[in-house]
Image 1 (cartoon, one colour):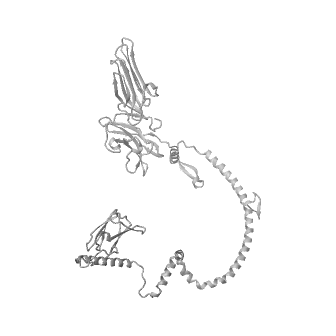
Image 2 (cartoon, rainbow, N blue to C red):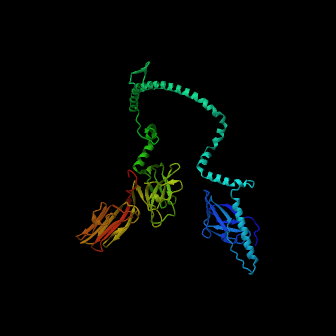
Image 3 (cartoon, rainbow, N blue to C red):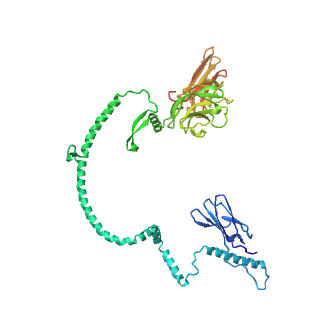
Length: 530
């Protein structure tokens, strides 16, 4: 082995947050002979720990190897690799013992490595010229130590160093300053005289500011208060005239969004500003948290498509408006995925962020927050405008909607010939939202002495005996020899799961109660006048 190169350091390398391997170009005999230093973005050095922070490859190679650092040094940091051989002599040669040239050569290699290591450190040290008088070295060291105690003073001098050259340039003028002192004293006397005159002027100014109305200050001139009173009188005349103009102006029957009102802007010192009628509506909606709309009524076109009528509304304090009927297929309306069978879809109005354009979207989510919106669009609070239900084939259940009232064909719910009760989801009604369901009950008895009762009640009541606000009752009974049947219809409120409470009581299996549904009223929809 030989040490044929004087290279004893590699780097610094720049970290990038991804690179972990950093090459060293010199020979080492053990992994601990490589020192790895990481410098952060602020310049602070950290000596990394072998095996904990890094591992070493290429031990014994003349051309070196790599230090593998984990984790990778961050971007903005630097990595420096140094030869770091301990200053100990661990080679033991015994008298008359065996001679191993390799052992001696390795010891010599370590000596050379230590010398290279010292050379690298000396190259980074502060030195003095060879010609420096050695007799004054002690004084130089004492001066350096003295300066080290004057750090604050040196920083103060450094802070004004830019002015030292200017001071040197005007050094010849400094004697003239003494000659100017006498002139300064003279100017001070003149200033005192001017101050006396200023006091007199101040008294006159005070009179101009405070003398009562119609009391002259001097020479027929009057105070500011006098002119304020005159101006106030003129202002009152003008204000009365403006009020007269307003009273006599032509009336406007209908307000539009672009109409302007006058307003005093408190944030701008009560300056007069104008505000649009549409902005007033927006302010009221935002301040009260009110979401509302009119129109936007969907209509059944076919098993895969609907139209949505024109309308206008305020959702989340922002205006939504369409002026013509919008035709859409289920696929065009759906926010994500494919159309599913036997599902309740929630229909929302959405708004384009860039220009306020209004469109519509259909989602399985019962809340605006869960809607998957197209890029650049928003779905705001209260913006649900209707519901669409699919049947077992994935087609739209036919419906006819007026306001929030939705009518469908009469769909059989169930028929009972024995006593039954419990919470059940009716056929073809919304699930995941409470609505008032139209329920039709038809009861029949087959012979005299029989009784059949059918009841549909609010799911919230959970029992037909509670006298719930929404309830449909139908009863057939016969004490004669002729058959008896009866029918009843009405609205019953479902719970959030779409369930109603049903109850059937029969005295014979020959009796039956048939339950049907034929639509619902969407009472939680924000549509006005519906």
